[in-house]
Image 1 (cartoon, rainbow, N blue to C red):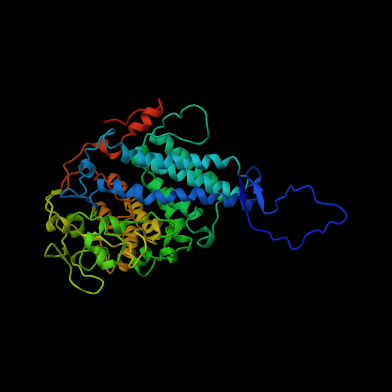
Image 2 (image 1 turned 180 degrees about the horizontal axis):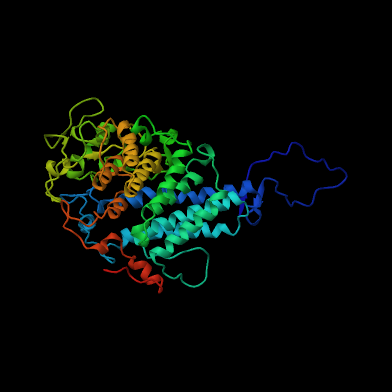
Length: 489
């Protein structure tokens, strides 16, 4: 196999006289053999593309497991979304390692398949910047695994015996060490060729997340360290809070000055972002002129929707009320006005309009109209500056610097048109994070950090503490004899 770099046109041919040409062997000038590719910094940088493409599965992996939180519900509407009660078990925290192996093994396999691909290339890389970027990306996937499964493996090489399982504290220390070691060689460039890639500020955000959850993952709080990382991101002045909150999630949000790390999606070239299909009603096809009818599944919990103040612009991320066709005609569902209601009367509802219209739907990510695909062009945001402000506020609050925390929270609230706060408790801080970060897939992590993930909410009784981490997938236990199941499972 050869990697084609570019076409080179040879302008003239040699005229041979006095003899016939009998050697027909061609010397290729426009290709480089695979075993010779990667010898220059430019060629090594080109190897990054396929390794970053795995980030495209971020949205899908997180979207399903977000239903374990208090902000998302996937109710059963007649026979729709029954799926063997998988969504009900996730909502009620009654999942099992074997019965729900597909959900957990999907997340685990995504992390470690991505890590393996990176490891396969690392030995070929000599350029410091490229090497640093790949190691940071590898640390990110370990961070995701740590967050979900806690007792994981460190995959830092190819081959050898089955990796040994590590504690949360051991994995935390390895991720921290990796990020700090590569940090000096990471780029400070923002946007352009570095859009969607790891630079110093992405590493700062990842370290901030690591430190913010350190007490949960290791038993030792690191609030000051979390604040310091957020200070670096905010103080860099490389990013700006967008005046329009929703511009960060538009179909052209690659232009956002607030987004620090986003997964680039393109409806025709790199599909995979399809929140529109997951959340909209079947007849919403007539509203947005989608090529196919949406699936009428994901909605937000009633209590979560009702927690938004009416003067908070962020409440506009939810679709409620009468729906209309693209031509402005009021739509009906089986003769009933097609009006989304925030109320979800039961988790399992009989077929009919009541079930189909239950639950506020999400339009935080702008819903693309007249698209040619079920996928959308919006890039999915992993890290953004608004989160850095709220992480710094939380760290300050936990350090007793309440005035500093209030200042940062009010910066975020001002953009939303919400009333400034004059006091701030931990419950207030969690609520603010919910309003700002809804459906950006940080809620599970936040609830666990604030000690709220296992409490009772609608459709769910209080769950035991071991549910704070997911089980090691049954598939992985069968593959690696060094893995032991997480306690409680």
